[in-house]
Image (cartoon, rainbow, N blue to C red; front, side, top):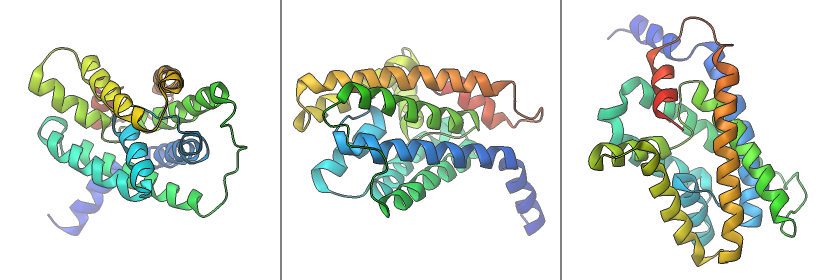
Length: 225
């Protein structure tokens, strides 16, 4: 493949609209994680929750954890999701990690909500939902959750929603090692809000995209959250 074909492929996969959606989504998503979730120990399920879990246990920055876990999930699901999805999703993952590094250079902007967990759960769910919704609508992935869920679905059958529930509840169960059971309820609130907001954002932007869309965008939305 020569340089011209490579550039044409990149241009097709990353039109300005898609790149803008991913950048804005990753900025909002990472802002909520850094300013709310990491500070009040309200976790998410799936790969995001596992990122927070490892960050708490070992103190490793999510900017390092996220790409490692996501790449593992993407490699497992490559045969089911296709190369285009993989390329766009890797870009989304690296963008999220980059924004985490940016936010870590500054003190938290939002006030500490440790004593207001319900507010933290609601705001956290909104930030995650809006940010992830923009990324999913762009044809990318918010992380390895989609890939991991599809691997489980293809391996064991059933419904794709069951695969998501399996990963979410497994991580939330492990999170009991540092989050009291009474506080896990707030994580459930966050997951519920973020899931519904993702759907709303995806539907809002569905009719506002340029008419020419690649198959990766359609496939991600159909198979994603």
